[in-house]
Amino acid sequence: MGSLPPWEGISLVTYAPRNQHGPRNRLSGDGTEKDDTNKRTNGRSPHTRRLGMKVIVIGGGVIGTCTAYYLAAAGHTVTLVERNSTVAQESSFGNAGVIAPGYVTPWAAPGMPRKLLGYMFSSASPLIFRPGLSAGTWRWAARWLRECKLERYRANRERMQRLAFYSQRCLHELREAHVFEYEHTQGYLQLFRTEREIRMNEPARAMLTENEVPHRLLTADECRKLEPALSTDAQLAGGLHLPRDETGNCPLFTKRLAQIAREMGVTLTTETTVLSVRPNVGRTGVTVETASTMQTAQRATLEADAVVIAAGVTSTALLHPLGIDLPLWPIKGYSITVPVKTELFSPRIAVMDESYKTAITPQGNRLRIAGTAELGDTELVLRERAIATLYKVATDWFPGAGKYREARAWVGARPMLPDGPPLLGATHLPGIFLNVGHGSTGWAMACGSGRVLADVISGQAPEIDLNGLTLARYTH
Image (cartoon, rainbow, N blue to C red; front, side, top):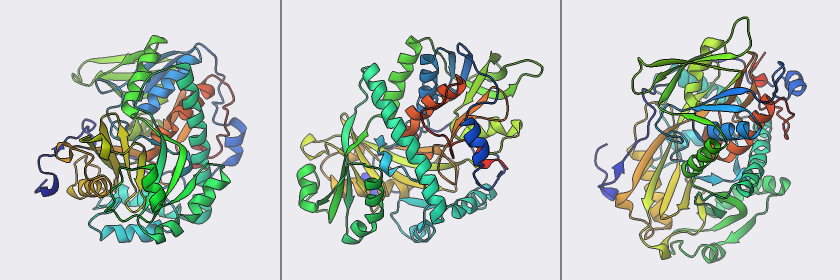
């Protein structure tokens, strides 16, 4: 790592997938939506579904765990397969914990290519671009650039927010049905360092108004009144308060929900790696080949009526042999988790630094600082530059809040599609379903995505329109 003088002694801990390298795939389609197929099925399988099915969910992140829960609630017999020793150990482990549906937007946006060039020459930036010689990275980036057109951005944003707002409603219903603690906080404060940032935020505020999302533009004094712990030395031009946005500890939520799911009859199979998935020939159902993560010679075969692939970036390795090639690529995300030093100087609500796209979230007696992303290198190693940006943002706003020398750093691979929205629902293969590609907003979309999959597999019409959220958009 080299010298890290501002925070020497920091524990640089990664929770990396075993043997994780860039996924092998080739690009399929141009992202053009096939509305006729999508509207006809709304993500449902063309094959008749029934209740009381045996369903295997592959992947124990927040997406897969929510899927298993909703399938069990719908009356199915569910097995959740996870390669780690427990759930939420990879992409779900170190995220910011923010649920802000009005700010769930695609990376591919007008103006982003120009910003990306600027970030490449900045010592502290929200995005690191290290394409190297990877052909896969360059192909993904080219696809991403095509999605930065205004009309594509608007379509993709609407799709993502349609799911995110629905997911928040599902989360609230789940909280009413099951009382459990996951370090939930209410409210979100976006901080602007300059007047220019306030002006540049006008389209976002118009979008919030259009979606009827409560929000209020604040002066610097009003920001400090709402969040008294903000440093008086920090440059602050104003802020945007979103009272209905919320945060929570994603891995804690996932573990609690997994326990609830087990009490409902879900079988949680851990330390098990899925080797292959294939539809049965000449009969209904799906066969899943697995191996022990710790002892690969220990193999097993599982039979089910249906399989949901929710394995993040490793989903491509399972889908490629089936003839399904997705432009899914690992975008690295970084965070640091810091013990609270003094509650008086620690934030009560989550804040987001607009300049660096970095969130600071209170999680019990800790602070989670997350935001820097990296496109290019798929090896899960920590970058000093990324950690330095997070440290700078945290100490700019809350210098006395945390024991920053005791911070734990994390890097994970977030499964990102170039256009932004995830892929939900049926494939062309009987019994094989998708819940993949949520990128950096999986926590904000998890409950809704799980509910959609349960409805689709049960043969029920989902409560939201799945137009633009299914595999049809990558099908010619």
